[in-house]
Length: 381
View 1: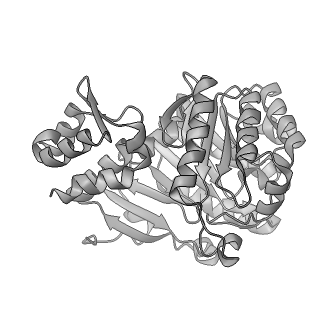
View 2: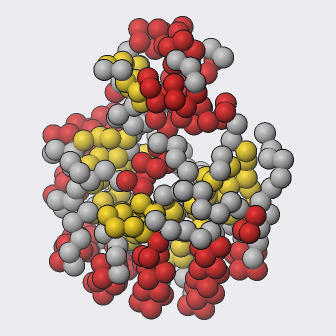
C-alpha cells in the first residue's frame, strides 16, 4: 500500500534509526557489458567529480555512524581515478566501527595495484572481483576486456596488498557455454585460493545488449544441472553454501549481503540505489541530471506486516541456516506451524522443507524451487 506521506527530500527521512549497513552506488564503467542491467554509465572525469560531490552531500544528510558493514558497488567503483577513489574511501571509512566489514567491487581490468593499495590503506578489508568467466570467447561475448592472465595477476596483487577476504563472481548459463567451460571456470576459481565465490545464473533483461539481440535464458532443467555441477565442485573444495548463490570458507561469509537476506534495514545512497529504512523500501532516481540537481528518492513503498512476512520467508529460506521457530514468533507474534499447518505438511512430504532443532530450512531441492515453496505457504492465507 502507498505511504501516507512520502519522503520527497532527504531532510524528511528519520535520523539515526540504528541502521548498521550502507550500500553506496558508483555508476561509472570504462565500458558497458552486454548482460548488465544495473544503473550505469560510461566514466567521464568531470561527471564523476560532480557525482561524488552530490553523493557526499547525500551521505551527510543521513547522519550515519557506527556502521557494521559498507558495500560499494556499481557500475565499477575501480573505474574512478586514484584521487576520486581515495576521496570516496576516506569519506566512508569514519562511518564504520572497529571490526566492521568494508567491501568494494573491483573489475579485473582497472583494479591496478596502486588502486588496491589505496583501498587497503584507507580501511577497505574485503574485495569482490567481477571475474564472470575464464573462457576467452565467453568474455568477448559478454564484452569483458580482461583475460585469465589478468585475473590471476589482479588476485595476486590484492593478496600482496594484504587482502585476505576476497570474493570472485562467476556467471553461468551463458550463451554458447558448455559443461566443459563451466567445469573449467569452477576449477580455475578454486585454484585462485580465495575464501568466497559467488555464482549467478544469467538473467536476460530487455534493455541490455543480450535482451535486444533476443538471447533467451537457459531452461530450468539445464540451469539446475549446471547448478548441481557448481554445488558439487565447490563443496568438494571446502566451500559451504550459505545462500543459494554464495559459497564461503569458514569465517568468510559476506556480512553485508546477510543484511539483505536477514531482511534487516539499510541505507542505500547514490544513483539508482535502494534502501530499507523505518519500514519503507525506497529507490533513488536513476536519472543522472536529476540526481545532481538534488532529486533523490524516486520510488518508495510502505512495508506492511504482510509484506514483512513475505520478505522474511522469501529471504530467510534462501539461507542455509533458515530461520528458527522463535525468530518467526518474535517477528509475527504467532507460531509458524499454527499459521501454515497444511502447507508445511505438504512441503515436508514433498521434501522441499526440513525441520531440525527448532529451525526451518529449505532442502537442496527446495532451494531450487523457492518460488514454489513460497507460493505454497502464502496460498494458505
